Image 1 (tube, rainbow, N blue to C red):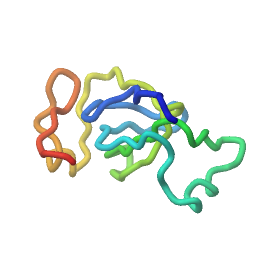
Image 2 (cartoon, rainbow, N blue to C red; image 1 turned 135 degrees about the vertical axis):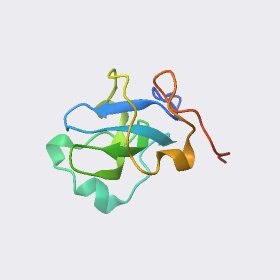
Image 3 (cartoon, rainbow, N blue to C red; image 1 turned 30 degrees about the vertical axis):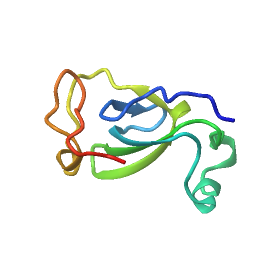
Length: 108
């Protein structure tokens, strides 16, 4: 039985450990819950373990906005104090305050 707690919370801004993007957490899976095809597309020497939290992010880099699915081991807290500019952020969250986004909608 999985006993690990998620390190990051909904509305928290994080950044990727290796790749130049950051995002706001909008959902968390207790363990890997994406397709096998997605998992196999990651180079074997970089593939994260499945039995850890995986985060859904409204992500951004210098060129675009997108949704990312990232393992906990590949995330770090974002310490810039800057909001995320993803166009969908305000559909889920309230206005940026105190370094994070408060939930704006009721989730299941």
